Image (cartoon, rainbow, N blue to C red; front, top):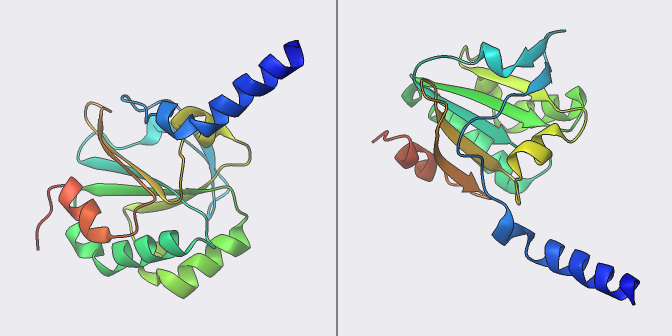
Length: 164
């Protein structure tokens, strides 16, 4: 009988996970590997002004590809935004994503590609869809908005208060 109760609880938990999962209101600390440099990148290195956008993506995800392409296309509008693209995929997949969909991002000074070798991002941020974008105020580290599964760069621009 205990087994049935446990099975029921686990089933209900996973069924309603998206309802329970919420983006952290304050930016949690983290450490990831940099994809294009042999360094660790931790949250202490984040900028102190402007906006921080954490983009948890999968290189093979169509919505992620469209959002990445949109960000690359409108890169000049994101003057006070620092982007951190975080993936659980190895460098060859990230290279493919960039080369096929978002070439301008690779050399952009306000963009970094990070690698989560474990499940740190999932555990701390609780994303429920790809891409999952978390917009934080860099000064206060407070969540401005969370876009989950969104592929329309115009919604990101609007969330950041960027027009035209």
